[in-house]
Image (cartoon, rainbow, N blue to C red; front, side, top):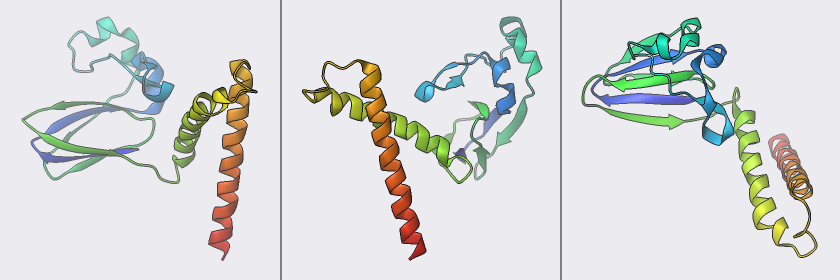
Length: 157
């Protein structure tokens, strides 16, 4: 999720539901997810350039100074300043998206373990990537399992 607070000026947001993603001509963006698009919904020729975009439903909002808009996980958003403006933005997670975040972070941790720890071990350095990656993934899963168990014990006390 993300929230965007307008400090000064105005900003227009054009948002699309996650189910419209396939019509926005997505490409691989942040963290390997299909969450990027070159589509400019304000371009007068948008439907000529991106015909599938006609199938997407835009939700438009103008955020004024002192207002905040929330972009839930998976929602596409396009923003344009209508005046000189200052916007503060922050990603956050809650119970509804925490496991997606944890899964992505665990994937990054597994990559780091594979690259910076396992690959440097003399007994493993010549192993194929698939073996190294499997060991790293199992290591992170065990760490996560241990973390969850310890957290549950603390809550129970």
